[in-house]
Image (cartoon, rainbow, N blue to C red; front, top):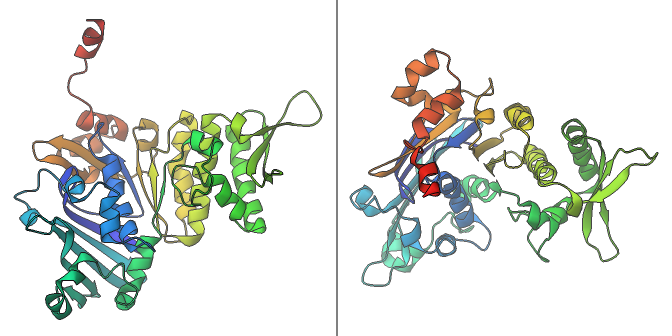
Length: 383
């Protein structure tokens, strides 16, 4: 299953979003324009569908309805938070639409204003329905989160549930919190996740990462996983030196760049087998520019022959200028009087003559999103 288009009203920075998506989406924009909030939209759907999750829990973890609903949306879509996702599964076309409102008269609970699912154009769910009219409490939950009501469209629920987000912190990997979930996105459960992978698969994946590190990291030779006497797993790397045996280091001694590259490679390789949607937050952090330039090619290879989609945020011109990146894969965020607007680079009018002239995409994007006047910054700091 893959997402083919997205239509959103009143989500965080965005008054409205409406565009088609392909296998890869690279989100660019100035600081505080909503890049992370854009990725969080898909995490939100995953949290609603997750086991033990649901609409109320997904909103509460984000500070409530008032924190996620756009301040610019009062006169848009009747003030509702509305999300519509179109998907395709082999030859089957799906649409899932959810509209959320706050309960009136001081209660302020989130309520389902409407929920609709279509399969190949046929409506298979339309809420509110007779059950909702007889028992309005049902509108505190979506059918997406209820296995006894989503049987006819469980493929969508399972897809949202499988969405993965990675923004690994080297410090979280070095100092994991005991009991962290294996799918914890910041790295605290990363070593435990590797250790829980079946040995044959783990060995194959670590071997692939080892080959990449041998090219990218000077003197790097080997990578393995070992468990200490207390049961704590550790990455162990061997580095060539003047001695006959390689010098061994654990993850506490790895550079930030090495840890982030290992984490990124593991996220991509593990996602490749299951497909679905992988969300990456600024994957270029701490990485050498030459490695960053190779990321689009690496991701394209990982996506070949499966249903894996990758949406990522970036500030890196090296990532944008890969010849395999098409303008329809670059989502440009710009901040205006009505919040953040978003459109793919291929549809931005100002970019068309520059794209035809063959200018680098990073240069075109910089002209669209960079702050207008940073010349006063040195004078401000000097004063």
